[in-house]
Image (cartoon, rainbow over all chains, first blue to last red; front, side, top):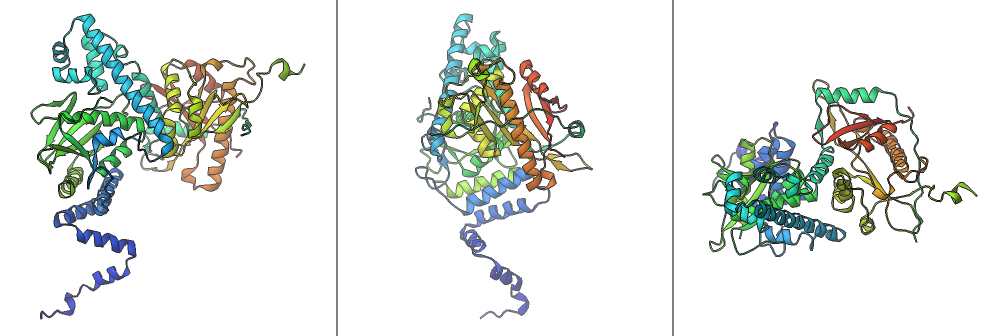
Amino acid sequence: METMELKDFPNEAFRAILNIDAKQRELIHRYLECSDDVQSVVRSMFAVLEHSLTTNEDRQRAITTIADTLFVNPMEGHGNYGFDFLTAERDAARKHEQVERRSVVAARLDQLDSQEATFAQRLRKILEEKNVTQEELAARIDCTQSAVSKMLSRDARPQRKTIFKMALALNVQPTDLWPNLEVAAILDSVDDFFADRELTEEQAKAIEAASSRPPVKVKTRELPSRKRK
Amino acid sequence: MPITTHDGWRMRICRPAFQDFHAIFPRYYARSVLNRQLLKLRWWSPDERQVVDLDWCFDDECGLPHVFVEPGGELATGVRVVFFEHSPDPQRPTLWILGGVRIDEEFEAQQKLLFYGRSVIVKERAD
Amino acid sequence: MSDLESHPENRPLFADAFSPADQPFLAGLRCGDEPWAQAATEWITCSDVLDSIDKYGTKVWVYRNLEEDEAVVGFSSLAATGSQKWPPPDGKRSRLLYIPQLGLDQKFRGYPPDPEWRYANQIMEHLIGQATLLAKRIQQEKPPSKHVELLTLKVHRGNAAARKVYERYGFEVLPGFEDNEHLVMSHKLDLGE
């Protein structure tokens, strides 16, 4: 029997293990059950977490990767790991976990379909009116005829820059091809304002100036709530 | 929705990728639009420089291809989406979406390690 | 004849917290044909309002003008932004109160004629009141880095009419935050300090 010196006993490691709670024990147990390759990935994710220069975004990516690795959570109908992308898209409305959102999600997907249909219809009409073939359009916007064909048959949604390139190539306005370009940009701009922000000098000065002004005295009012039946 | 299942790659996505996109695009509408762009990967070919109208490239360091979805309109920011080919069943050629970063984010050693790590998990676990 | 009898439209709106159950009654809401008006309509009638509530804790109110009618005439919203971090060496943090969207059905623009009861004014006054209450509550309950004293909003560069309304209610342009489509305006809340 191999003898061990006292110095060979991993006292600190044993003390650490004895002091952990049930959740941590389970984490370690799951880690130890993984293959060497997967354990190596988990270790590299922890290294990312501990690195002083890791951004919050990368920290979050490392956490989700560790969680996904150690807590396998197969989704019914999607196999043992991951999701079928097409099925997830198709079921986005029908199987949304919040039942009250299903109709809203379905309406959104219908809207996307409708936008693509309108675009395809308008593009087809403009190509006919201007006597431009798909090949010619493809050459003008530096893509393939197959790509143009897919957009015309609604198999592929054009990017915004593609819409602008097509509009330029066909000498029409982008809104002739895609009517609601501006609405989407507005909604994104509105949402963007919520984000955490590192202020520029100009922005910091503007906020300081606005904050140091006297408060505005304007009329405010309370409004009644409707009596519910 | 005019999606065909019998042409092109079978497409799979790992859970951390979903979570990446949730973080980049809190609005459901923006994520739906991103998903529509990523559906173009069904027609990805390593021999063509674009996937329909999406630019893509291959990163030699991490050995993974990326596709770029441009900002504009529905998408407040562009996204670099990392994917790769892994087909446990050779009869069903499959692309996996591993995740994404905003187009203005760094894509250096640490980020490449993250996605490379995810590809290892996919190879180990996917069926 | 009382004022209400001679002008029955001169009455307070009803304000209620939005819930997803309200969305079917929003189906007829049209804020207008301009891109910013279409965006407002889309925000409240589609998934954006739900995303905003879920992700940012946005408070949303719907306004009705008749007690017995479920139809919504307008809406407003209020949230706190993420952290605003000053450049080094200061590095301090604060937040802003923010109105992501508000809208009024286009058929009620300029209605009723009496400014005291005009729906747009009632909505603004209600919203600023709610912002003041929220800011005071935050002052009592949260650490100083979370306190808010500025109420902000984005106004489309082409929306001169809205900008006039906001200016009447003490909003001024906040330089440095503009983008291609919008200016940002701010209003210093009266917190009774």
